[in-house]
Length: 479
Image 1: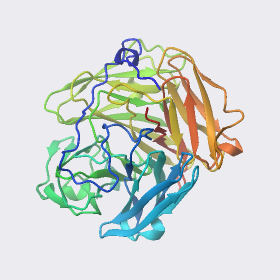
Image 2 (image 1 turned 90 degrees about the vertical axis):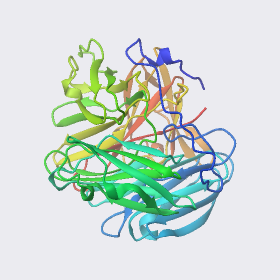
Image 3 (image 1 turned 180 degrees about the vertical axis):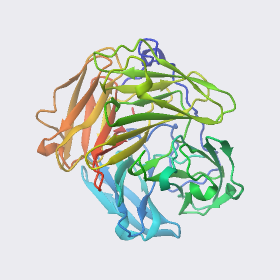
């Protein structure tokens, strides 16, 4: 594995150097059995020695057409051991030992175990090498999201939406043996809001707390960014959104960002009729931040001459619509948002597609390079689609040289190449969408391996009345 110098990541000077918050847990933070300290990054699979914990953002589990589950895939040639717990507002409702043979998967049906508005899974593993992700199910659809590999004192969400009876619920998990204390700050079009009841509020030990932001006075709002700070202990923040009305539709369940950063990458983007591609930029700081938006791997007919300059106002959420970028032609593209202003911002993409069944919205955080500039060559897909899916994987090559990609499927004998998906070329600084229609590519854990540093997003067919796809990151392999 190689680390990309900051100047290479700039992609010929249009992208600023990487700056992220390198905050670490306090020395006296409560730790679960197998806990290990890691740099703040997106969820990743570590190759290093030692134990690792995975913390899922949560799934609805009230038995009202809702539910979901968690998949733990053992990507190693050794037995994976540990334990998992299912947490609810009333505490742990199940605790079980993990004894997972090499190259096998454990599927946990959270909806069958828990009866609660939301439940989360915490997996404590004695060794590295697992891929852990969740699938949340709602009557309006479903959504896949990676679980987190760390807790944090800080969590951020740039998007929030409560127009037209839409709902936005924060799902806060405290996986530790001691109570946490946290405070919430929200950002709307009217400015900052600090609800008194949620300044220094308790999050009980080993439990889940759901907060409907409409009950905090954020009703009928198109913008509602969130900053959560744990003043005692550390937590995990997820977000459940149910969209109603003409502007958005469907359901998403995602993980918040544990850090501000100087670069946010997105491989999935499209200018087309019936598609709205918006980005929400949260700047929780006290001074304005200069951000550049750059379209990457766009159609040859595009005439984008350079990055678009955006001022992310202090203490606000700024909206950027990709259709407003000068010279960006119809068709697919990738995007990156960059700033040199410390400590950075948080960027989420809101992708809304209107089709024959209706309007479906997917909300996703951008992908991150590691704080030292490392971008992975290898990315895991915990579970691939069960049926043939067009453009299921969208890859962006971050370097100015060809990337050769091979997709392998996890079998009982290890990861084996898939004929027809073993010689894929991505041009320099290019984007490619890969169809998954081979039998050995469906319903499996996959490994996407590249000779260059890449980002990999997924487009996942969603169940529910609106159809369409949701987006989620694959999980990078740490160096």
